[in-house]
Each structure stands twice: as C-alpha cells, then as structure tokens.
Image 1 (cartoon, protein in one colour):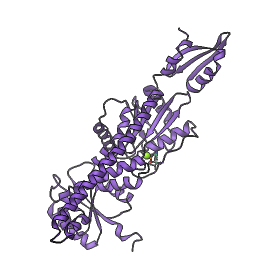
Image 2 (image 1 turned 90 degrees about the vertical axis):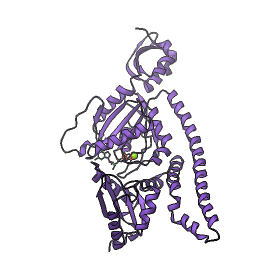
Image 3 (image 1 turned 60 degrees about the vertical axis):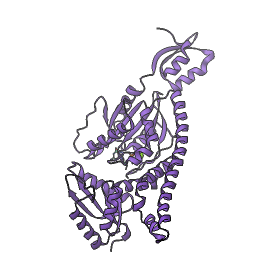
Image 4 (image 1 turned 30 degrees about the vertical axis):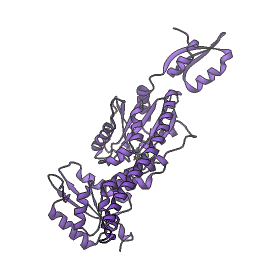
Length: 421
Ligand SMILES: Nc1nc2c(ncn2[C@@H]2O[C@H](COP(=O)(O)OP(=O)(O)OP(=O)(O)O)[C@@H](O)[C@H]2O)c(=O)[nH]1
Ligand SMILES: [Mg+2]
C-alpha cells in the first residue's frame, strides 16, 4: 500500500488538438496537481481535431474513462482545459467521482498561497467568478434545490438564485475593497515617480527565477537592510508583489518589482482579478522578461508571457530578455545580444552585463556635468557622494569641484551650481 492518502489519488485527462507542447502541458498539469497535494495515478489522453463541446473528449473515450474511474476507484479526475458548466454536468453523469479542471487547480494554488490582503481579495474574486456560472453543478446547491421536496420546489429554486445574488454581491464588495487598495497604490506610485527613481519590473513564466534574480541583486549590491523575497522550486511561489530599492556601485538607483508568474492557459479569472497589480508593470520604465532557457519549452513560455502582457494592454515599455539558468545548459550556446543577456541567478553569473543593459535602458537620464559647490554648502557634496556617480573631486579656493552624473531632478534642483562648459 502506498503511504499517501488514498483520497488524494487523481487521474489527469487531456485532449490534444494538435498542440506541439501537449506533452509538456500534461507534465505541467501533473505538477499543478502535485502542488495541490494530489497524487497522479493515471494519465489519459486523446487526439482530436477539436475539443468536444458536450463531452470534452469523445463519447467512447469518456466511457473508457468512466470504467477506469470505477475500476481503480479514484475520487477525482482533473481535466487539462477549463470545462464549461454544461460539460461538467454531462461528464458528472458518466463519472462516479469529483471533477476538476486546470483552472480550478490553479485557483486552489493561489488560494493556498495568497498572503497579503490584496492577493487574498484578488484570489477570492477569481474563485467566485469561477464558481458563479457553476453553482447549479455544485452538489450542495443541487441538494438544497431538491431538499425542499415537492412543496418547497419554488423556494428551492429561489435558494439557487439567492446563492447567485449573494456571490455577485460579495464580488462587488470585494471589488470595491480592491479599488481602494488600488487608489492607495496609485498614490504610492505617483510618489515614487516623483522620487525620480526608474521602476524596473521582473516578469516571466512561473519558476523562471524572477525572485532569485531580485535576491541576487540585493546581495550583489549589499543591501543588508533590504528583505529578501521568497524563492522556491514550485509553481507560483510568488503571489504578492514586492518592491525593493537597488543602488548600484555608481550610486545609480532604481526600484525593482517582483510579481506573480505566468503559466500556459492562465485562467482569465486570474488575469482579471490580478489586473490592477499586473497593470503596474505597464507603468514601469523597463521590463526584465525572465526566461528559464534550460527549459525545453522556453519558447512557448516566452510566447505565453508576451500574450499576457498584450492582454493587459502592453504597448511600448522597453523589454530586456533575461535568459536565466544558463548553468543548466549543456552546450555553451548562450551569446548575449543587444537586448538580451544570459545569466545564472543561482550562481550570480552574467550580472555585469545585465546591469550594463539596465543602465543603458533605464538609467540613461542621469546627466553628466560639472558642479562647483561652495564650502559653506558642504553637505551637498556629501549628498552627491551618496546619490550621484561622482567621477572626480577637486578643490579650488571657491569650493569643491565635482565632475558627476546625477539624476535629472537633481540637475534641475542644483542647476545654480552647474559650471557651464
Ligand atoms: N540551476 C538554477 N536554478 C535556478 C536559477 N535561478 C533560479 N533557480 C531556481 O529556480 C527555482 C524557481 O526560482 P524562483 O526565483 O522562485 O522563480 P520565480 O520566477 O520567482 O517563480 P514564481 O514566483 O513561481 O513565479 C528555485 O528553485 C531557484 O533556486 C539558476 O540560475 N540556475
Ligand atoms: Mg517568485
């Protein structure tokens, strides 16, 4: 006997409509199941021209699945695509077990990982949006409908409507809470923009190494006071957006954000609920699109990520491709290009070039100039030594002469000190 809970056994099922990465999708579905503590005991697949509207798979195949389910007595079957409410109803008539789909699996992971208030609200909205059209299929709703017997039939139906109404109201009030949080975040963003620090966002497929890159940068630039973010080899390790200040050795600074990763067939409920968080990415000055280049399906990952960005309304934020995990590549076929860089976040390799590209794309607004600072304003010399890239310092009898690169806003503010060439 296996030492896992027999109730956690599942069969996963997928229909291949001629998708190149189908095997990988099934592998990923298995990982999603494992992330929810299920044990995949069987996999069933079928090649079809298109998904069957009624049965998801072919009717004969569904009967085969029903036999398998009753033979091995599994409590749950998980489907690789989101099932429509009517598919769920019809399939339930064939299978004597619980039915789940990829969307619900992803939503359940989000539900168990959400930590901040915002992520919790977003996840609850996504779950309710998913549930709403499926209420009739839910056992308890049906039981309640039937429960009243003949006399209460009318009242039972009203119960379903009441459930629907309650859920819709809950979604509404959660959205109001969310928009309050959004307003606060926008205020913070405006303040940040005023601080003149460029915002750089890490985005990419789940498990690509975004959080590891953030931690590597924090470590490389000795930000002992900056808290590390959570990184782990699992799907959706990050759900909460984190933002950290990175100050390079030449004192140039930027804000780096790390956020939720993407996945193939990311449920539209998730995209909608997380929209306000994800849209922040579109307000950044630069996007670092992180790719696990050791993954044989990294091209599909890149496409998925770009598609989600487009869905959010991406237009023209510059993107640097960051091909991570080069240490896992067998052949040395990793050559940097003008808008791409190969790194290993784990072994902190390739960061010099990454930082060069960041400087080139997001820190170019630094202005190179010469300033003469009178001795009585000595604290300004101190300020520039902390917040600008001071290239040379010399003294004459009027004060301190700094040859430096400073932020545009500092240049404007201290224009009086600038020595015209
Ligand atoms: N070998 C190797 N492993 C890496 C590298 N970078 C990250 N990893 C590992 O990849 C796994 C995922 O890393 P994360 O940084 O959590 O990935 P993420 O992109 O933040 O993932 P989500 O938060 O789920 O979207 C962890 O086990 C890391 O240790 C790398 O350069 N080389
Ligand atoms: Mg992460």
